Length: 296
Figure 1 (cartoon, rainbow, N blue to C red):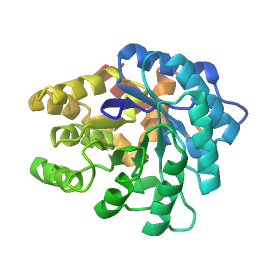
Figure 2: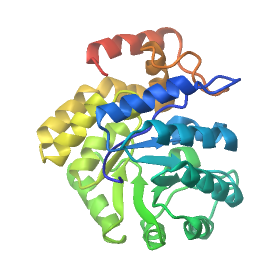
Figure 3: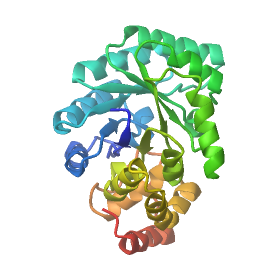
């Protein structure tokens, strides 16, 4: 489950309700494509903007419509009490695993983050992926902290930020972390532009924004890397450079939501205010880019 391609679908919504039908279509589309896992309620799924009841509903829908594909559910929240409740909801929905980021308003210490994972893993019956996403949580894990957390029960994977662009430096970075965690704990790369580099450097998984909406090319990149075909994996990734550039400029959530709206996969608006998809000239650029790259 915590290897290969993990697709992070959008949670399409407006200010009054979640578009459940559009969410279900996304999940079924990903299952049909053959992704290795589906992660509902990641950052691409706007988990931080949803109520507990809305998150429980999304978890239920994801599990119900994913077929044989394992479903991972994000359980990050500001308070440990709420994380524990969300973990319970995810497990009751039938999730195969959970994803936890150390969400905070007050800056957390390393001991506080370790305590969060210690409290949560104590109550789990499914495996957990550590969500290392400093761009949204503003918390930076050290490799040593990852090593401590990885010893806890049920910890099965670590989702790391993009590694260095240089292949040798990327491999060295992965090897340093690998030496500190148990052999059963996988390492997954996030940051879609760096996925090919991370997979070729030894990462076990790609936790992907793009794959949550357009899984075909991310699957091809992942399978090429798994087969040791570095040239093909890099070629396919490099072809998506215009998309990666937009991710970097506007944020992957806004860009991928805009793309999904343009392709009719979700209705507009699809993001929780005050967050908005992109309009004007950049929206036109995305439309042209989708046609040029022939993503699906």
